[in-house]
Image: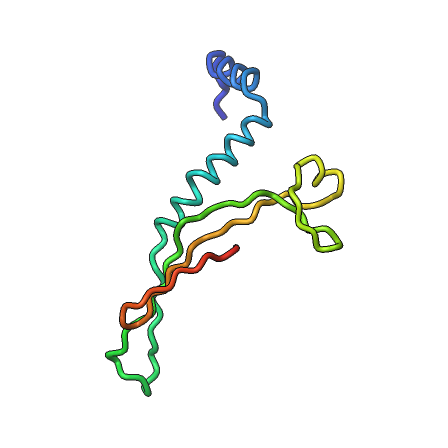
Length: 123
């Protein structure tokens, strides 16, 4: 194992002095939501579904399903009486709730013959 030099130790100490662990976690989450999730969805190929049974003609066109445009809603909680209201991280912690935000995507379904249907789904 290599022992870090004093310069490396100084850099690490400066990082922890200037940027708190909480701030680092927030930067990581922001990067995940704003860059990594959209890239992952954009880079995913469309799902192509085609019947492969012998009773179908092989000239039948395939259905194509593409997921696009991820969006995030506001974190909220559902009360026992059915009311939906915004939730803060402190409230979630105090009430032992999960603090999460809904994610929505557009699903583009292209039917055989070229007709398209776009639907917003909650994930």
